[in-house]
Image (cartoon, rainbow, N blue to C red):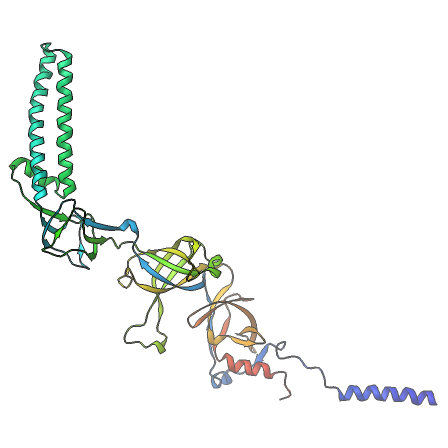
Length: 389
């Protein structure tokens, strides 16, 4: 009887513990289905939308400067000293190849023209002697030695005349002007300076009425059909950047837009990284990356400082969703996928952000409908499923 009472006491104790202990309930995270009616969706302000597949991923925002490639920039000067009598182009003007930029009055040009005409006249006399001795040699009237001397003398005269002609071309005279000089023998000290390329005047370095020395620069002209971006990449991010990555240029807000409106956006202008620097700037601790801008845009100008975004291609299930579609819980990110009963919380990983959108990956097919707004309300209902209420 004592043994029976003792067993009875043990069973009663275990039963009391079982009754007093709370029943284990499912946690809020494990209960991922949210049952909600269609009418209740409107009351909670929940809107729905589809997933947007993305093929490229934003990697880094970085400041950049628009520069002109060295091969597209020319400094215009003249090899002759003289007085500037006229300047035809100003900063910002578009000029065509061969267009007149300036006119100089150069006494040195007169000396070059006189030397050319003299050398050309001597060449004509030498040509007559060359033709005469060539005929005499064919007739056997002169020795071979005399013919060699005549031919050598004619070659010397031709070289000297060609040298004088090249000096005139270097001075700035065109071939048509030189031929006209040869025909008319009319000397002129006016030297025309013309543009060697089609481009834009970037800088004017002389004024009319001033005297310039040989090789003194007059203009700086650039062809703006191709521009570069010099991007400052923080050294800790250089391993993320690769040659061939695309670069988007950020468009600043217009005067009608306020900074509070967050109106800055990415322009359609793109560039591609073609070079990664091999040294670190000791002051800014950044590495220079060079990108070639594709296409011409009037909003992109040399010397401009602009924010850029580097993007890379992304394979696999990567989607773009509004930031309002994402809910955070215990350090993890969730979106709410539409199902028959209501919504289902789906775990995702955020791999990038661009403006008001986030790039995510997860166990998604891309055909799902999700809650694009009202994630906060759904999260509250979701976490409340396991409560006593």
